[in-house]
Amino acid sequence: MSTTVVYKVSGMTCGHCEGAVTEEISAIAGVSAVKAVAATGEVTVTSAAPLDEAAVRAAVDEAGYELVGPAA
Image (cartoon, rainbow, N blue to C red; front, side, top):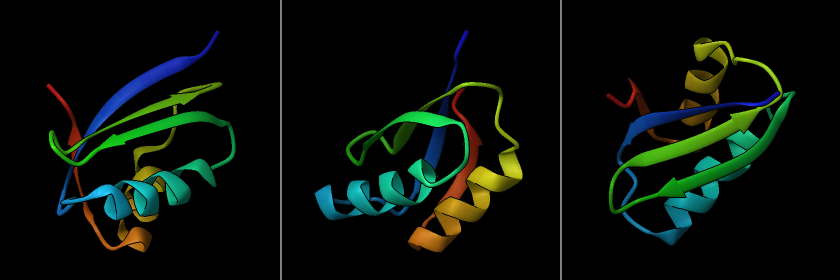
């Protein structure tokens, strides 16, 4: 069973931003799918098991953006 979480990320403004965030989060072990949408500032992450938010935060930081937290 997979887990899907939507995160809010600030600073994404274009397709390049989406690609950078997607690439970094995709590198986290267990992640099977990532969909970043700059227009909404949301990143949907599907993984085999719940992810450590610190790992997601580190990946988003590495891409040059800021993880706000899980979307409400």
